Length: 237
Ligand SMILES: [Zn+2]
Image 1 (cartoon, rainbow, N blue to C red):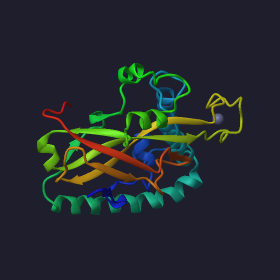
Image 2 (cartoon, rainbow, N blue to C red; image 1 turned 90 degrees about the vertical axis):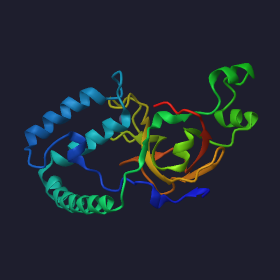
Image 3 (spheres, protein in one colour; image 1 turned 180 degrees about the horizontal axis):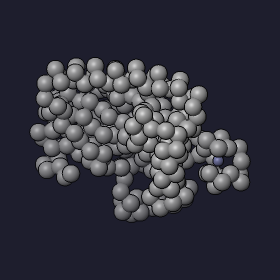
Image 4 (spheres, rainbow, N blue to C red; image 1 turned 30 degrees about the vertical axis):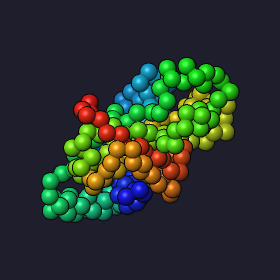
């Protein structure tokens, strides 16, 4: 099974603005505004612990739900979405025991700082692509799994680097207040990958990200991601 089909990836086609703002579907505009202000303070990328993509989601949700006309249209889609979710939940329950959840912390980025420094590869002129070539690394991320996990049905949280265009200036204003003139935000997104066991040590799984978007006005930095499976005696976390 060298190639993970995109149907096994949980794509984010519909964005649940209510869930993003942590709101019930019955709230009035005042509460939408309050929720937005509270969350924006928490997640704006200029603050410590902020996250550009998270902020963008919050901002987009606010723009839709605080506008009565847009909200009316959106509410119709949201009702359909909830019906679909409920149907999917029933189907999943019929499929038997849940998959083992593997957190994103199980991934290792290839080439640790020490070994790069030893080979003189930390110098500025080296791009990470060149470093990987020299170190003979042909994958993007390494996934550490225990022997039992290699054989189990898994749901793996894969961290993927994404970039989001600034919603205020769309990358066109060097004086932009929202993005500090950067034009876009860099962040990481989690993609859920279902694997059905039968994995082996050293196996490479290629994740196809073509046509997938992490959210509105954003894209993944790469079209494919190569994941290397490594067997470890005891996997932490
Ligand atoms: Zn901007």
